[in-house]
Each structure stands twice: as C-alpha cells, then as structure tokens.
Figure (cartoon, helix red, strand yellow):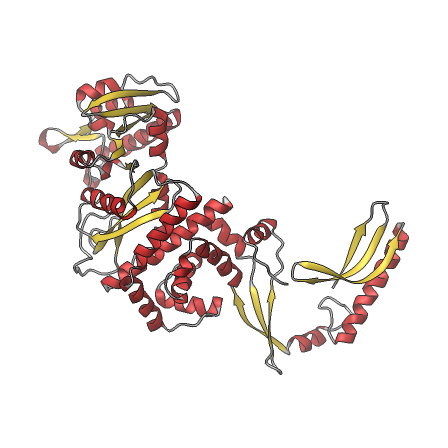
Length: 504
C-alpha cells in the first residue's frame, strides 16, 4: 500500500491509501480532501497511521520502519526464500511475435522454446537446457532436445518456416518483388572433414578448420525467406542460381529482381539469369572494367548525388553514382593502405601478404604502384551498379541495391547475436536443424525490430529489467510469483505493445 495525492479541478488535494493490483491502483481508504498545506500534512499523517495499523493486523512489518530492529526484520525474512528469478516476461514477449508468424503451428513446444531461447541466450544445446530450466522453469533432458533437433530435420521444419514467412510477408507487407542474396561460411571446432564439413575458402580466416557454406535470401522487408547449406568447398559463385530457381518454383514468383554483391555474380551467372528471363542488380567492380568503359566512368561529375547511366551492351546498363561521404571514406582507406605499403617498403622482412599499392620490380624488390594509386584517386566516391532491369529508373536501381544490407545484417545477427558460429554439432541432421533454429530466430527478430523500431539488443536490455521472482514459505512450502517494479517507460511501452500484463 502507498499514499496517493490527487489534485481536483478546484485545486484541492485528495489523500488516499491505494493498493496496486496488477497494473491498477485500488483505493483502500479515502482520508479526505485538503485545502491547504496544514490539512495535507494532517491527512498524510493519518494515512501513514492507517497503513501501519494494517501492517500490524496482517502481521507484516515495513523493511524501512525504524521501530523494528534489524534482527526482527531478519527473523521475518528468514521464513521465506527466493527459489528462482525467471526471464518469463522476456520469453512471453518474443513468443508473441513467434505466434504472429504462425510458427506455433510447427512442431512441439520444445521447438519454440529452442527458438526463443536462442534469441535471449544463444549458447550450446547443453547450456540451453540449463537456461530453459533455471531462467524459464522449463525442464528438458539433453537427449530430449537432441530428439527435437532430429525431428526438425526429418519433418522439414525449414521448408515449413519458409512457407509461413512467405505467407506472412505477402499478407501483411508486400508482394515479393525483390530478393536479396548472399553467402557466408561457418567454421567448426574440429580439424576433421566429412561429406558436409569441408576445408575451403573462409571469410573468417579459418581455412585450417572444416566449414560449411550457407546461402541466405531475404525479402525487401528484411525477412529471411530461404536458407540452404552446402559443403564447405563449394564455390559461392555457383550457388545463387540453384537457390533462386528453387524459390521461383516453390512460390511461383514472377516479375522480381535479384540483388547480390559483385562476388556472387559472374559473367556466366548473368547470362544464365538472362536465359531464364530473370532481372538482376549487382555491384560492379569499376576498377576491373575494360579501359574503354573505365574512361567513360570517370566522367561522372564529382558532385554529391550525381548519377550517370552507361550502355553496357547485351541489354545491360551500368549506373554509376558519386557520393561525397563515400569519397571521404575511399580517401581515408587509401591513405591507410599507403601507410601500410610504406611501412612494408621500410621493413621488407615483415611483408607476408599482398599490398594493394605495392608492386614487384627487378630482383623481387618492391615499390609503390603509382598507377593503382592514381586509379584509386580517379574512382574516389564512385559506386557502380550493373543491371539488365533497364526499365528501372537510376535512383530505383540504386535504392534497391542499397537494401542489400538487409541480408548482410541477417548474417551479422546470426553470427553475433545468435552465435551461429562456431558450430559444435557433428551429425549432418543436427547441423541443419541448428541452422533452422537460427533461421526461425532471425525471422522473429526481424518482426520485433520492424514492429518496435528498436534493435534486438535494445529490446533485450529493456526487457531484462523485468524479472519474475518465485518466493517460497519455508514452513508451508507455498510459492508465489512476484514481479520486479518497472520504472523505465520504454519497457512499459514494449509490454503494452504486445498486451502483456505483469504484476508487482
């Protein structure tokens, strides 16, 4: 109970004793209305006495009442113990979005628990089991969780999730008109190969460890739509077309554009896409273009926002834009690389890799590659976009490509927030099941971020302030749940958003 002061329209102050029940205040006693400071003090004094009388009648004491000694408070508190401190509110919040995607129709409760736990506390399955028990009061055996993973693979939860996401995005956002494609590698804490885990080029500088290659396709709204796993020695440039074909067949897609980084699409890939009447936008490596085209590119005005279109032949166009912000970054990067190159010249014994602005001359000596430096200066601030979607406006081409960060962000989330790597599973079925859990978590996170306008890290931090505390009477063994008081308005707003109630 606490004292509440309410100011009426005529300026008088009502003094009440209220009790908080859930999120509502219930008036326990109305002490009266005060017209001046003296009357306010008198009524507040009466309210305090009323609260104290109620405490005495109920056999409880105030922890901050100086009339009671520390030993007396300790004696009262010693009759109770805190059994658990749970993250149930955080779980319920994310589960709300899990259900919104219709994922609750897939698999058993253990699957949803693994997905949501992956968002809150991404660790190994053994540690996940402990987390589910200690922080969510959900009990599973480790073997039971592994059986769930086998079920995930056998019943193709991945395919079911992809269909749910496609249905959701088409129903609530937009038709699937743009697909963003990218590839990454995941390495293993092992030095042994098998049919799936192979040594290959690693983006994590882990070429000495077995790895696998993962492709991810996301929608314009950032929802993961398609994930596939390939052996670690597969060349990433050969993976896009099979994945796109599968998506087209699965969802009967037409009139859409594939957006990918320059590393994903070779000259052969572009021809294959065109043979199947597919539109694409890819990043162009301007420095590698033929001299004739390169000479045209550098005519783009060095004015912020300048855009120029060039005919690339074979019904393709190259759109080049200039950005002052990009120019500043290019200049800064070049200066850093030149400093490293100069250091290498002064310390030839430490040179163990190629430097962009160094070249070998007679007797394997090194010198600054002035041609590359000059070329870099000319291309400063320029970015190219190669496409066969020639009917699109230049700005639209640039905007669509700029959204490629959606898939790149998904990979960053999976590798950091969800800790998809390194992976310790050794059985193919469990490896793919693990990535299916990560995939589902990515979809939930995307919906949370899109709905709240906050990053998942910020949401987790805000929700971490709300704990469910299980208190037990040592004598009767009766248990009750109490919730921590929420002081942060952002946290309250999050819970109201999903209509999630909490008590105190």
